[in-house]
Length: 156
Image (cartoon, rainbow, N blue to C red; front, side, top):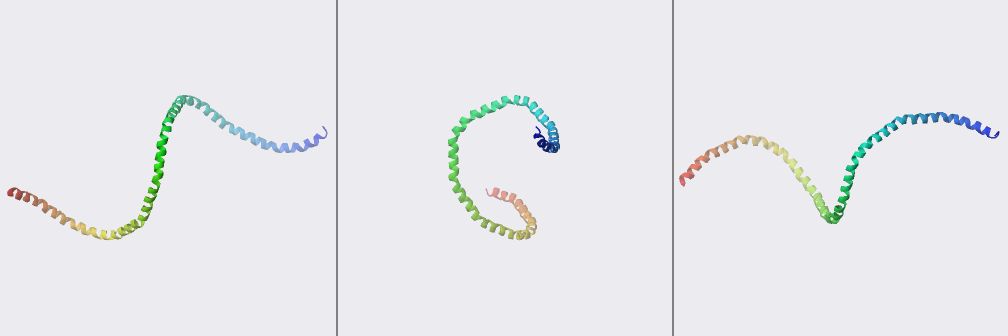
C-alpha cells in the first residue's frame, strides 16, 4: 500500500485539472436536456397522428402493390419505347447539326434585317402621309359601288 501512495499523489493533481472540464461537460449536458425533453414530447405527441395515418398508409401500400403487376406488364412497352427513342437519336443528331449549319444563315438574315430597319424608319413618315390618299381612294371606291350596281341592274 505504501508503494501505491506516490502514484496516487501524482494522479490527484491531474484529476483536479480534469474537474473543470468535467463540470463544463456536465453543464453542456444540462443545457441539452430541455431540447431533448422537447424532442421527446414532440415524438410522443406525434404518435396519435401516426396511428391515425396508419390506415391511409396501409391503403397506399396496398395500392402500390396492386400497381406492380401493371408496371411489370408495361415493361415490354417501355423497352420498345426506349429502343425507339434510341433509334431516333441519330435523326435528332442530324436535325441538330442541320440547325447548327443554319445558324450562320440566320445570323446573316438577322444582320440584313437590322440594316433594313433605318430604311423602314425613314419610310414610316411617307406611309403616314400616304394614309389620307388611301382613305380618299377607298372613299371614292365605296361611292362608286352603288353606281356600278345600278349600271349592272340596267344592263340586265
